[in-house]
Image (cartoon, rainbow, N blue to C red; front, top):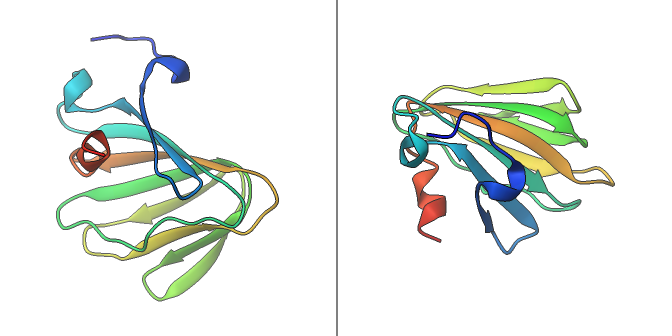
Length: 119
């Protein structure tokens, strides 16, 4: 297991809808009980609305501006804001700003990020 990581070295995938996803830590890299990744969303793009059956997802926004839709409610996103999505809660991120929106995501337990490795 690597204890120091660089973005250029981690698994990444171009999601073809002006989004990039990076898996920094997961079961494939030695993290058994959680996973960590980052995502970059271009202006005007958004994640697909989704929810997780067993996992909690936390997202920390560190660059850009947008809107979070969590359940039925919308929230403004800006640097140093965080989303908390327990299992079963629908959520989506929309980049409504003029620059890339970047965030760190955490899954506990890990698992949902594995679909990215299959793309």
